[in-house]
Length: 534
Image (cartoon, rainbow, N blue to C red; front, side, top):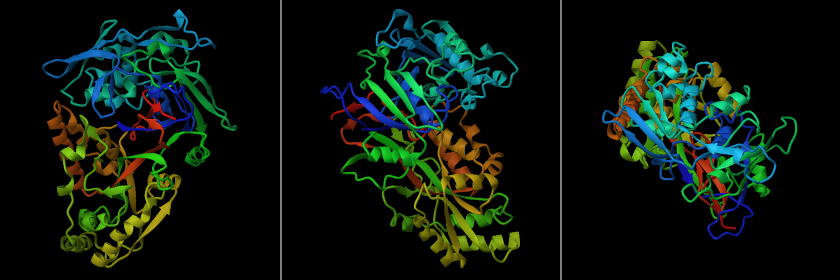
């Protein structure tokens, strides 16, 4: 997760910046507040502020205890035991006043965490996170309906002790336990919602920093809101919650969000395009979380030829391209972007991507000639690079297309389209070359590699290599970094994805705000420790 200092409007004038009500926006109505199922950015933001897990990722990117007071790992690295804190409570807003009645809150137990994880593995639920937790012993049998949910090695020792057994050492397991999918779920409350868990303000409980007081959404109307109040049951010296309220306006698109921010109706928003905002007036924090790379239509008879793809890869002069770039993007020679951190350090600091890709114009021409003979073509005909205009200014590609014309003697055009059309044409295969935005669903290298393997342009070509499976058994950070690097090189040497740029995602806010935490991979914005000094 990446941190940014931001957001605000009207507070209690506390010197520590606490007590503020944040007026902010959601891009669309949350599809679900069920943490084992939610996967859109609006849902992820609310879930992040509604629940909390055994572990969390701090502002520096380190995995630390949250609702776990402590944990221990067996010598073989395969048994994790978590000891829960005594001061984390479920809170359900059953009243309309501000008084917490005794029956409104009760302790979170190890049973709640076990039930949440078992729901992830339940094949009937179809959680998008089930494969992430397939490392748990017995998960395969449960996920494939061969055994009941309690077959998985998730053991409640007592109300404050949870043990999980995994099938191989895994340096990413604690980070996995910090994800929303590992948040607790109370079985009794879940059953009481009769299938509506997470779908309205009466079917959610909070064990996190805030609870949902009101959630109103009319797809045909306006003034749609989701209103959250500080969860005083969990407010203590060891679990500090800075804001008093979160007031979310549910907007239909980013254009509406920008307009409300311009009118000073809201205080911060996330975007891929920060060009309209002055850094002297606003706080603007960018995180290079997206890798933009060239992909080729697998159904094209010519681009199935490796020498042709290799010719394009060797023709990329990144040193020349770097001279034309602004601070929004940087040249990329690897697949995993710099925003992926391991123990607080950027992966790209641990493994430089410079040796991965080299420019060699003469070899590029040789590969093109070899491809012409192998694929039996004299000309590639008219070609264009399909570009999602909402991710990058396509002018950045002109240096590349000019180089192709210089080396190869043919011109490749650029076609800018909307995000919707880009997705549609990628899905239907209506393109020859595309500038594909690659982003993992979480802050891990394995998530980025997995996203590429499952992407429409590369799915068929990479399914045999399945390099992400090579991460299993990486019990140390050093081994994990080594396997990440190997995976990058295997994929790049297939020339199915040619990395060009690392692109930033942004959090933009007013300057009187601090410590809003933005995760550019899930899109979640965490306001738990956010402060306002207006």
